[in-house]
Length: 149
Image (cartoon, rainbow, N blue to C red; front, side, top):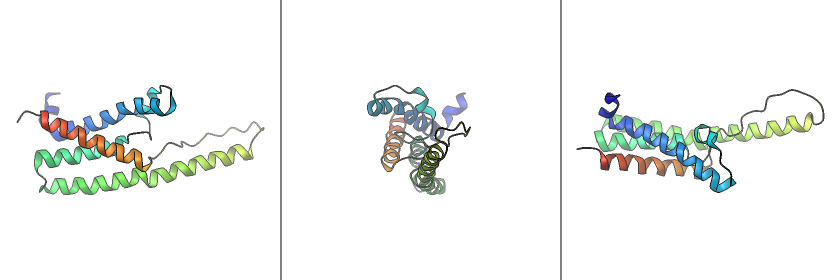
């Protein structure tokens, strides 16, 4: 496991994901007034763990390898796709699943029809993505500040 700590960019990546996953528990409680530990590792929720993971990784690459690195440019491109997807495509898929589930319930109400509900928490609201983005920035900066030079 000591090899892991030779790659601060990877530490930023994993720490960004872990920080966002852990933060989902108190934010869920704050909004819904109940504890949901499953929310920490599920899709959706505040902050976006996808956004935090990619932002922390990208900033970690910039801080540790240089902002003029070709790898940093690639990380920016991948981050843009992931953040757009988190708030755009995946969010719309979740809305479609929500509406399809409603249609099934209305069509088959009162009749014993077995159907599997579609997962509705696929994407994030823009606010959740911004929360993940900020979580990633703070995480990467804290690691960079505390990393032995």
